[in-house]
Length: 533
Image 1 (cartoon, rainbow, N blue to C red):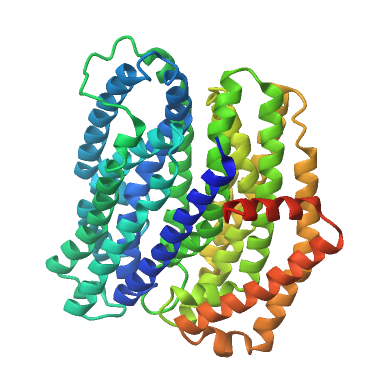
Image 2: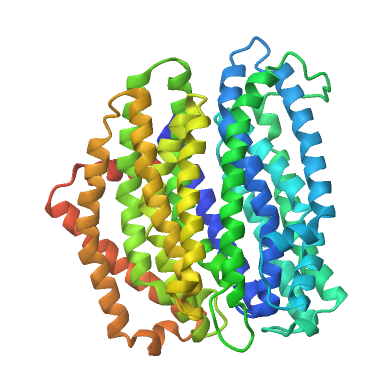
């Protein structure tokens, strides 16, 4: 398996999907605003399917499905018999979960929000009825995508979300043409507008799922419905999945507590960062995480699964160390540079400067955990490669306890306007402590991990990134800061981010070259190989 080529395909697809995703958010913000009661109601309702999907995808598919496909692929029929059973079972479960979630939509909205008015709650419930059916299509998308990944076909899963973004951009653009742009009061939303927004969001997920199915033939598998689920090792799968699902349910409790705290700041009168700005800041945070961590880490996860299944423990440790170094070189720079460009980056998906200034602290608070989460990605998936979902449950429970306690204490520490940034900072601190515990537990499981070189490399990268980030922030201040041209419009904000990023990158590479960092040569070789040179 060519990890460089696989990473390149995933990175290109992820970049395209994230860029179009940002365009989607820009159009949506233009249509309904980044802040306000109506925007927050839609954000909560549209995020609900993602919360449920996280349990299905990360809790079951990533932790259970990929290692099983790798194992079953060694069967004489390439895994066809067992995968037919698993796909049938998964489809039934997805349908049941989607129907139940739709029926109890009012309860779910009440659990993850603390809206101050009945009108905002009722609007969120109305949106949820149209958004929750996304759960089924999210699940099928992940089911097919993880099968493709496990069989070494990485590109379609990374590229298919572009279809969702294109459909959504067209739908939200048509919404503006029919109903007008801009933030609006709750009373302005009628039944037609609710259906239009909710259905647009759902049709985008349907479209990306249909596109992914077009690549199924490349797996070489011909599956058929099979309701005879005996003989597929359900007992073992259930034991593995139980801990993983439990871990994600803990994560849902954390998200519910966080949103119940954050939604108290939702307001039309004052620009406070609330739910919609939280999700927008998270979207920007996920751009480097997805582009770097997911694109490079996903092929490593498949390779880790192969080595773990074969009992090649030294190869697993070597993969971990190499992956941490490679990820660290890139995510350290991304974190520091985005912090320097936080206001222009936030302005890209904000209606005005006030919304951008309210969102920037939330983004910075998230970025504190970008490097720890990159390391956690590798460590957690090493546990998964060995079929261990029990241990990740416990270090996730540890993180959840800190995040919940910190979020509940946030209103006592932060003023109303800084509430959301405070919750994001607590999330980052708890994630950092989580990765430290995860490394300790993995060391106990495998013995010496030999990742000291990777962790020391991250320290060196951070020292090199600090002057680069300082230079980028100096350019922002030189341009006038928030009152300057960099935050006066979306296009200018994009140009500002490009300028800050270019200068910061030049300094970062220069410092690494000055100290002859070996990883710089390695990443250069990787880039040349991707360009076919």
